Length: 393
Image 1: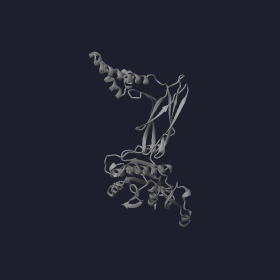
Image 2: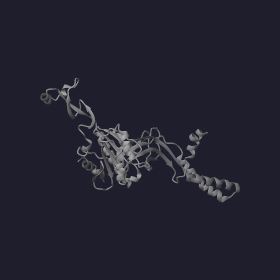
Image 3: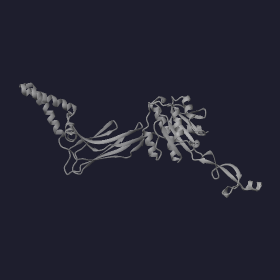
Image 4: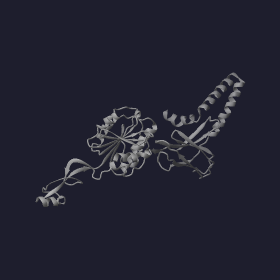
């Protein structure tokens, strides 16, 4: 029974619009009462209402056999750029198809364009551009052909091309070497472990069998009369953590939150391009860092959260996800207090370089410190490089 309703009855009944059902109901009532009671006026009204219903049915009879292609030039764009695509409608049959209207859903909006009469094997192409003012995942499609009457009593639509996703990535800026100098460390981050072969020189010690002769310090050996070798500190590769605060009450406005997302995405993207180890996360989830596309896709779907976990958990999570991190960047809003920042900083591993980027829409770049945490105020994404250079001094 459910299959019969889904496959047979529902498509037919769905053709009639709510206005059409109202007119149809009034027509049936007028015919029933007028014929039963021989009321001429009701019969006339019923006839007048029946005429547009018959005309509407003629408009939606038959079915066009289109071949429709929805083609997006790219499935990923940056905020502020237009996504361009095309819809190609073809007639694959050997008989002409009358003009119709095509609807293309784009997010919550719907674009419409007319398809002229198509002869056998004819094609018609429509280009479209999707403006992108906000970071989002837009659903483009499906493409439907629509046939309806002038009074919109009946409407018949057929879906030809399925929906596709368009990722609108956050705006990011590239950071030059001077801006990311504080993230860059030729020798890595020294640890307390000693090694017989590394980059960071620590001290000299007596030679023991098995030591590499290339590390013998010949000048000291000649002076002391016994073999002396260089001892090194083990170093670890730079590991940058980018933590984005998504608590809604920490941001003054949507624009301020978008600035924070763009700042975090810019730093994470620069770290990825420099092939450093990267961990990026928000209060609720961890961003994928396997490819740049996945990283930006994940930043695209970041939203403000109404949950209010203790702010120090962001520092604790950074320590849990990357205990050997060399730099931790915490991106926050204007309503984040100094006490909250200090509480988060105390949860970080000892020796890590910790920086908080406080996003305040329109503010000048300033630098301050809360304990061992450097705090820079960022008012525009274009000044991010200058803000990071201030930290690196």
